Image (cartoon, rainbow, N blue to C red; front, top):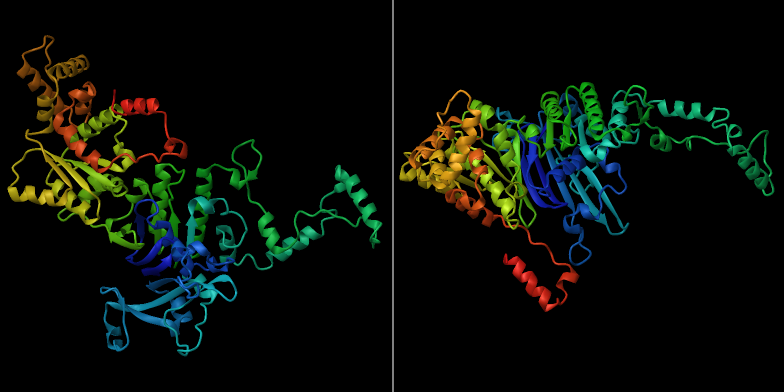
Length: 608
């Protein structure tokens, strides 16, 4: 079973959204775009325990806390609708009277009068669930419930809430990596451990047994063996002045809890021994990585218990985990669940998802959320994507822009020049902080394909490439897909650096290389030759070191004023698009300043 469509209205930062999913889904986008909100929405409409909270929704679960219209009386609800397809036999049986038909290719519900289309191979049974949250003015409280989208109730009759057993049969689990980790192994309601006990039906009679065993401990806590004994004697003596004690022995006793089920849930703790010779400690005291690995162990347990149907929503599985564990978690979710929804900022997680399973989210100022499914550039083979571009594209998709150099030499040169410029001018907003990645197209016409790809998913891209036999139409096409294009006049980035860096730096680079070149690979003489020969040797060395950082080694020797103007000019245009955020002046800074100090500050800002 899986979610095919999710609709959201007036929930948190989302005014409205309609999102379609084909299966396992990775949600990507900038901070606060709405990734976690989608997971929370799924939890509200599918989760078996989410609506048991008191209250189930709060003021800021409504967008901009708008749960009442401007008149102060008209209710403005939040609404979440999920359409489930590939239904299990259990759901078909439990919800037989509430099923509808979903057209898979047209991505819509069949409407009245289309019953003849139900036999179409592209039409299947579906279940539509709707959660509505609102403010109850009369009771001065927030309420929410989930109902069927289709119901056989009379039109004027109040729809009934979906039974908990139906939601449990759906098999949805939401793991908030940071927030759930500290509760995962507690016995409070709705935690992973509690879910495991429920699915194994291990809770039946468990709490009564624990309560009785604690109650008959004699004494529950031996006060006489501690310094508490005299204190309790004094308390009992003073109590006897007002209330006559009944029975023999102490009238006061100490227990480890209130001996109620709910209190026991909160007090029973899971202890863990972290290493040989160490005492057991509460599991919350373990490291974050260990804690998240424990959570993964619980997830695998749950999946084994519900092999036929598990839908997971999981936030940022990469938190405090090394790359290999990130990949393992992603592989587990993709292979062992019927559907997963994952949010992530990690290339190691993103690269495990196929492009069609990645949805890039964007939200405008009106709160309208949209999702674009990632598609490979036209003509790019899946094998080529997996071998050469998966990591680079994964990183670029997480940012606010991407610089594409045609080859590895361009990429190395752009990165090194950007680093030097940023060190020299602190007013520049560093590219990595601005969210700009630098990748290379690896030649073979991929520059055009990558430009079309990034334009399709709405990421500004900037191209830096060699002079080749491109037609005017091909150049125009590149200019149409890239926000900035720079075609260098030389035949290769190596030629560019030989022409635009000082000859003294090139010879310095060659001398250093000669000292390392014991085999005479580059034929660098001891005595400096004529200028043209120095340039030729530099070009040969840079080409020979392609992919080994040769370009960066040469540029590292250059002062900022000696860097190639073609590269600095190209990067300068990009820096202008991503200016450094201005610091907001404090009240003290905005106060009238001493004219002399103000004049001095102006001189410093001007570089004097």
